Image (cartoon, rainbow, N blue to C red; front, side, top):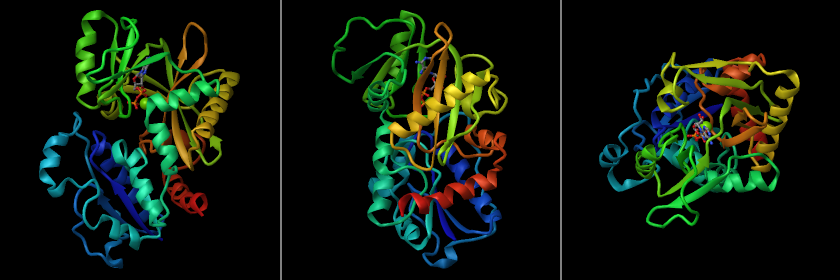
Amino acid sequence: MKITVLAGGYSPERDVSLLSGALIANSLCRSGHRVALADVFFPYRGVLTDEAFTSDGNFMHTIPPVPPDLKGLRAEVPGNALIGEGVLALCRLSDVVFLALHGGMGEDGRIQAVLSSMGIPYTGSSFSACLTAMDKSLSKLIFRAHGIPTAAFSLLKKGEKPKEGPIPLPCVVKPCSCGSSVGVSIVDTEAELETALDAAWKYEDKLLVEDKIEGREFSVGILGRRALPAIEIRPKNGFYDYERKYQSGMTEEICPAPLPQDEAERLGALALKVHRVLGLGSYSRIDFIREEKTGKFICLEANTLPGMTPMSLLPQEAAAAGIGYDELCLAVAEMAFKDKA
Ligand SMILES: Nc1ncnc2c1ncn2[C@@H]1O[C@H](COP(=O)(O)OP(=O)(O)O)[C@@H](O)[C@H]1O
Ligand SMILES: [Mg+2]
């Protein structure tokens, strides 16, 4: 197959995505496919013929410790287009588009809507499912409607007075539609609240203030119609923020998660339910905290395009189920045809 891997984009998670993209591209080359890798935000400078696709597999990217300077990037690209010139023409030349994007227009359904309109098969979930999962306030309403436990929350809009009274502490402040813990803060004291709100407003005009859930953290990947073994996430200190997600050695990740079998099954079934009620496609990853005082798994959110480096959570879970990285990338690429046919 000729596969275009789309990565980067105008999102705080662009570096993570560029790394996922490079490693996915290399993997697909190892599986015998011809691949073109494009940063969706920048104009595509390569040839727009079949020569664009290579089987060399020498792609690479390194993630700096802090999120990228998006304003600076914006200044580099003329015309403020979300999709760089030539990128869609490249997609049109390919049999399938592998979305290695995270956050922003890659994960909120916009790029999926464009590809759908062009009849180009792409990996992951439909544009409507992406839109629902990306907006944490919307997905939490759906969780509630289906009896899926989720933290109590209120929504803050920039410039509007909160409808409810004082914010109950401890809480978690997070932008409504970001990812990778960008702009997320845990607030234990009144003094920390202002700083947390300022940090989150930098990213979005709509914020969630959630009750803080005390307990162990888990994530469950879905591949096809099955839940993969859960992974437990134990940051060495603090919480699972941007740095602890992407700098090696800062978080202990244990897969399969040490849970009694009945709890592991309950968690897998709940993750599948989340995947189903959000209408997600061939794969996803659902985040949970097991509330210490009740033993309930509380759903934080669903990720429609989870990290896909071999060290990312979902590939680790696939490996624990006997599915190697190359097999995983291939399965995701192949399911793009079945889902959209
Ligand atoms: N309600 C909460 N209680 C405790 N910790 C939370 C809560 N919400 C988020 N967190 C912490 O913040 C991290 C990021 O939050 P999450 O909702 O998963 O957003 P993101 O899309 O940025 O991954 C989680 O992995 C968890 O460590
Ligand atoms: Mg998360």
